[in-house]
Image 1 (cartoon, rainbow, N blue to C red):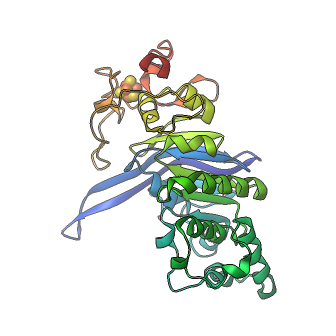
Image 2 (image 1 turned 90 degrees about the vertical axis):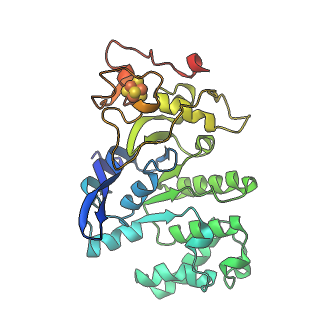
Length: 339
Ligand code: SF4
């Protein structure tokens, strides 16, 4: 872990045990399976992938809500895997969480003041500081003037205001890192960009690390410098956002760009060809490359046998695909070839 690293994740695995008749072990769901990455202080990264790719389990593991099966996680030099007691409490106060469904995330019987004061009570923040903290975070998420909101209950707020309140709650303990799991997918299209912009502003002002998890590549450019593509529990491609949008290398990333629905998406290249088939089972993932049953570049005897390691065909751009092994170049096709 280097000095500028906020979060370091190494070979992280989160497997859920399957049981038959309640006691016989019937296998494992490999929801996160060998994920590694670093996030610098004040950096934002988007993790993009379709449903069932393991994104939410990765978020829960980073938040300490699910214990990893294997691997290492450090935040600001503190080891998080296997955290219990005080270490877990430290995660709760230093890693904020913005959930997908703001209404479901907010207790319906608490008003705004109670929702924001609860984490301050739990983490024993001095009483004389609490009111000011609550007013500061409401101001930051632009729920102002505070008097208009402090006594309201979640059902009295619009969807966008509820999500602003969830963001305020994630900030109230002054965390170092925020994990936002599909934070705008349940909001009206008209407020999505606004809420993402708010998250971005908060990230810059507080110098936070942010992990933004989404299935929608079209929102990536509003948010982060870096993007990782997740497929079947693995990060198959990592690059700067602009590089990924201009030059997606993994056949799955190329297909994902079809998800860009915004016709004004700056320089976005829309791929017409979506691979047939469904994401694979995480209980019995295919051998070799997990994308091989859907991949039009599939190489018999290689892709279905050996798992591809990470190749770096372009500086700062990592991809797990045999097309980029030394001597193969980028023959798998960039977006330009496939479009
Ligand atoms: Fe396709 Fe093979 Fe690359 Fe997997 S390793 S994405 S099957 S070309």
